[in-house]
Image 1 (cartoon, rainbow, N blue to C red):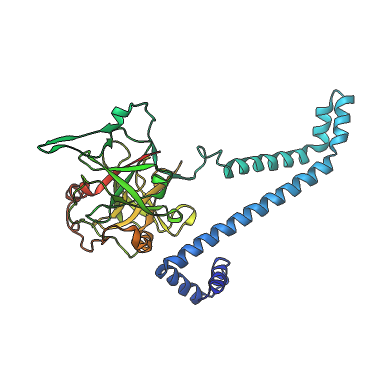
Image 2 (cartoon, one colour):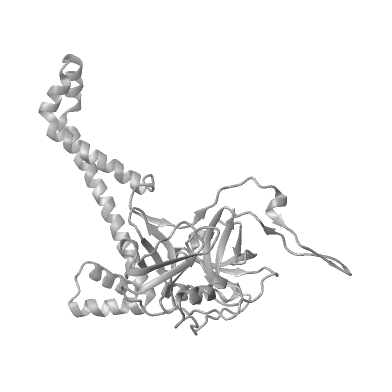
Length: 369
């Protein structure tokens, strides 16, 4: 199928110009092909932006028409000559002034929304990267050096930051040999990245691949002090998860790992984003990049945000897009093999037992810039 043909199909789908059978067939194609699904989402967002732009132009035309009808110059003269100008102006023009004021207020609020000025007051998608307080710490406090005396001399391991970093998120293991996944927005702009395990040990890592459009980043622990984790206890679910299923997450919204129970409440994310799930789970800044797992311990998504003013409305990128991102990593970016586990050893365990096994595979991601 050519690109133009796919675009035409997407437009027919969004405009509801397909027959019932054609629509079912296209929705099956979306489920099977993540690239098609992503194109539908992008096209829908593009159409929304065009619509918003058209509405703003129409508002401007209405304001101009009302401005001309009121006759501003006559009002200025009336203000100068008559001390009761406010009463007269309201009597003659109150309906037009009310409409103009309403439109102006709406236009101002729209501008504030699209420029991000109302980010703290509207019900919108909020990323969950945690900004850590910037502390004035000396260079000696920022680095920890371990010296091991040997007969031939002294061996010094790589200095590791002791401070919490500028930003904090969560990541979890893709493989036992040091590949970690987190959100792109967690590590965006980073000068250096460290991951810290449940025992408090920090390891230097590097970002080897990112997909900003899907908010995914793949890290590799490249610290000589790191030792293999052992077999990863979970696998990555490729099929869809049913609504109402019990799910949970495990992450670092603070200094300690936190368990968050909940349920899958929607097959789509914020504003109908088909690349995400919506879940009812308590999440906070620092949870970004943490795993979303089903009852059996299969990873079904990556926590990446929540909606403000809506209690418990969190979002997670579906594992379909994580698996696709892993396939897209250039081979020359991998210094060792990246093989995902296909056996789930968490199934059948109690939640407490699952969490004990998970603990060593979920990391705090500390970002320095």
